Every structure is written in structure tokens, then in C-alpha cells.
Length: 432
Image (cartoon, rainbow, N blue to C red; front, side):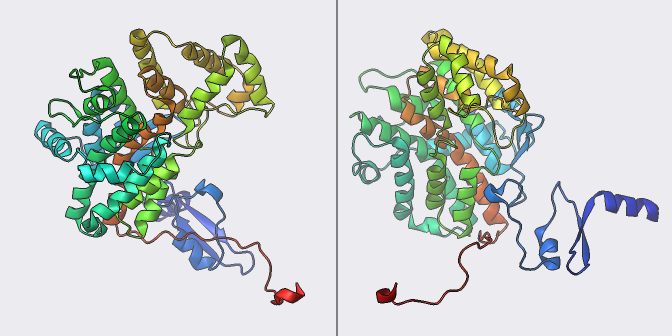
């Protein structure tokens, strides 16, 4: 390049900030679509960038998940989500997220065997993790508490700077979280959880643990297994979302992985995050019939109701995960029989996508809009929906946790803009 071309290239890939109070300026290069805050603070020390909800803040570099919200694209380690959901198993995708590449057959077989060997809960773990709860406890509360309790059972997990220790407990968490989830649901229903079987896959074992009655050997339906595998894959990771950020913040203090993943589980439980698919089912129950869809849409536009399962912080187009599971929903209902809620959901989607109110706001169905319908058709109670999300997302959480520790990321410590009282004189209590 000539000197003029280099200058033009430099200016086109940078921004210039001027402090009007001093007249000083600084040019900051744009790298990978972002700018480094350290240059900002050199010019403007003590002046913080206010960004509630981290809507415009990149907290890290990551090579795990790519999202193009405008185009409706989602990729894990460079692989389009459509290819992974249609052609891979969940454990293949978990291996990909953790290791950066899809496994070959030998690697996959070894990985599946390693996970299987670590899947059963010790009887003492089972009693400690579950027996303290009431039968009507919400399973997400049980799961979150159980995950946190595991940290006391594996004291070596606190040595997070050792890659081998991290690997050991990464396996343990991915292996045991479906066991904990199944044990929690069975405890709530007065059933005994069956041991995991060597002849079943990760997802088949979870279905068997939920649905087997102990009298007849359970044979998971292949369509159900494929649907749950797809949902696990679609939910496995989604970049720096609320729960992943919670895992990173707790993990940045070098807390053990069980505590960090418990933080992610707690964040996921909220209706604005993982609990949204539960909220979709409750919304469809309130709408009740096809004849009420138009009136409900009007109530949303008037600000009297919320349209759960539509819109996304990142996607300004159709969530690619939603289209995949919309097709899966039809396959499930061919087996279970059509659920009236699906007709309501389809009409609600059609009505909203034809309405300028929703079009102008770029509100499209997201993954939560159809996932709850599939879970319910498969027989899962509504309270279990977010637990299923957590089983899948654990692999993503651990991928980000490991990536953060490999880079020795600084402890999370955001700033604030103080808007409280100025310094005041203390008044004794008798004079107040």
C-alpha cells in the first residue's frame, strides 16, 4: 500500500474521540467490530461509559459462538446451527463447544463413554441434594441448590487454575446435570430414579430416567429422542447472554465450577431469560381459543399484555432456532395428536407477523415460542421446561468458563455513576 492508502485504511478502521474540555484527541482502531476501552480511559480517566444491561458493551473476545442478529444467523465454532441441529448429536455439539472442533468417531465414542461413566449420582449425593425439599418445590430451585451443594462434595474443584481439574469437573457437571434434573422431578412425584443404562445415549437415558416405571424396560421413541436432542443443541450456547454473564462474573472470582454454574442456573430461572417458554404456555392458556387471538394482539399493542416468545435482544430477524423447532413441533404432534395450543400459536404468529406494529419493531418468534409446546407434548410438566434448558446450556456455560480461565481474565468489576446524596453531616438519633 502507498502511504495515502495506509492512511485511508487507518482512518476507515478507527474512530477519533476528542475531549472538548481539553481539546485532546485520540484515535482508536476498530478491531473485530469493537474498540478497546483502555484507549478511552487513557484520554478520559475516571469517565465511565454508561450502558445499563451491557447492551453495547463487549465484555470479552470469544471464539465459541457467532450471532448475526440482523441476518438471523447462529453458529457454534463456525458451524451453522441448522447443520448441527439436523445432523449432530448433543454430545457431539458439547464436545465441539468445549474443544473447538467436532469429534471424529473414536473421540466421540470415548467422550460418550466418559460422560456415561460419570452420570450416576452417589446415594449420599441424592439424599443431600433432594431430601431437604418439599414435594411441591420448583425444580429450578432444586437444581440450582443441588449444583451449589456439589461444590462441597468435590473440594478439589476449587483448584480452577489446573486444566486437568477443570476438565474433570466439566465432565462431571455435563454428566450429572440430567441425573440431578431427573432425580428432582421424580422426587416431586414420589418416584425412584432408575440408574442410567449403558445401552442408551445421553438423551435417551434422561428420557428413561423421567419416564421409566421400573417394571418394564423403557424404550425411548426415536422421534422424541431426536426432538429433545435438537432442543438441547439449540439451547447449548448463545453467546454472552444473562446466564452466561452470571457464570463468567462468578467464575472470574475463581469460584469453583459448581458455584459458577449454579449462578447461571439461577439467572436462567427468570421469566425474562430461560423461563420465557414457561411464560409462553401460560400465555396460550390465557388466550384459550383461536377466536381470542385478535383481541389478545390488540391488548399487547395497547400495552395491557405481553407477547411472550417474540422479540430478542440480539435477533432483529427470525430467530433461526425458532424455524427449526417449529418444524420439529409438527413432527411431535403427528405422534401425540395435535395440541389446540399449536393452532393458537400459529395464528398468533401469523397475526403478529402481518401487523405493522410488530413488523416495525422487528418482533419475530424466538426459540421460546415453540419449545414449550414440544416439551408439553412430550409429557414434561411446565415447571420442568427451564430445567431442560439448563441441561443443554451447561455445556455452553462451561465452554465460556474454561475460555475465560485459560485467558486469566480479570475479575469482573463494572463501574457505576453515583447519583446519591452528597456528603452529609451525621445527626445523632435523638436529633433526627
